[in-house]
Length: 172
Image (cartoon, rainbow, N blue to C red):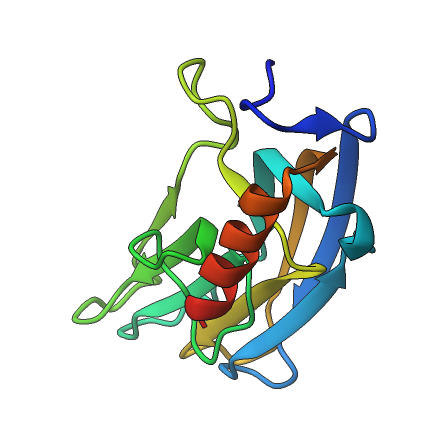
């Protein structure tokens, strides 16, 4: 994978593993993961691919249940979707059983675990951390999401770094 113009690799490929668990059932919870980037050297993190795995929603007869998970370049106050500029991964699992007497039918909705061959990367994180969000719906217990983010540290030009930091901070 070639780096975009003006960027210089400062590391080889890095895998960041994480977990986020609801603080209580059906409660929005966010975890922040520190990238320990060197701001003085205008360092950023290029995300090449993401994998995520969610616990199963509860199968409750007659009740729709769900788990939602997202990863974002900045902190959020709600679950993010791919329509949000600061979100680079979203994963949702649903069980639709409203109106049925059994446990319903499960649906899994997630973007690709890695970028297609046409995309050189899926996100650039210029601030020092990124965030993981989870929330369940109509579940009896807390839910958990695990994930891996594959990327590389890079050094940016001064103008690239300033533009990316400003863009991330304005997307709050």
